Image (cartoon, rainbow, N blue to C red):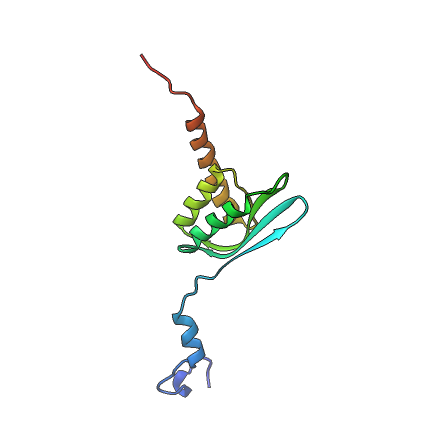
Length: 134
């Protein structure tokens, strides 16, 4: 029998039910863990930053940012696997509000770098006095 001889396979092959079930479903897993230390509060984001979880991240950051005294809040995106366009928009808005981020992975660093540049441009435009051209 040769390696390419498929005549020994049954005429009709079916995947086991546990395989087909996992292939059909897509899960939007998302988790935010809050880690408090003496000097900071870290929001560890895990999973997919897609709707409806985008609003949850914004709400959690705003609540976590209250009554911290000298501590800072850092949003850790090292364990984030997917970010939607809505997620990028929310990250940009949080940057404009002063949120600090940490991340790991090349793609996440690239996305955060691009959003940080967009944020700096937006803040520069807002901070610039209106110029009158005659």
